[in-house]
Length: 164
Image (cartoon, rainbow, N blue to C red; front, side):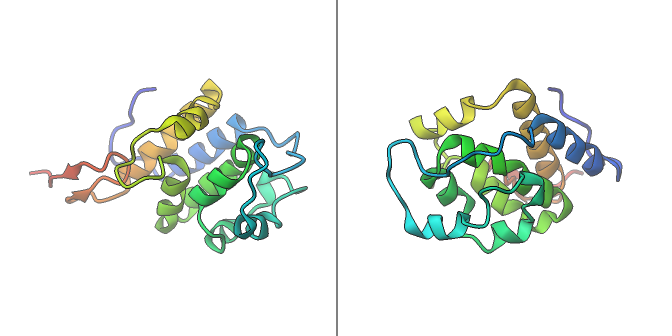
């Protein structure tokens, strides 16, 4: 997928929300959140009690803000459950970009160097082509709307330099 030029139109976020909604099905709703290996994280269990049985379009950004962390939820739930509810976080962050760190926490490897390890690689490769394109577009939007005059790129962790 080609990168969009900087200075996206105001409708770009609306178009991206439509892309995310089209890429992630509303049904079927996952029956359970537990990992396949049976390992339980009771703090995450408490946080995700508000999710099961609800379509992802009903989960507000506030649910994610008040939860332990998206990466903890990703690690402690089964892949189908997390992938099902992930678009609710992406759409919420498109609307409220001050919370982009939550989406990055959900999408990037969960270690200090953001190194793709086996569990994260399995997560990354579980998305369909359409879902992957929606996530890449989301990450491009976050990158384009962050640190325009220097700082650290939140996606690549590269240092940005101001444009002359």
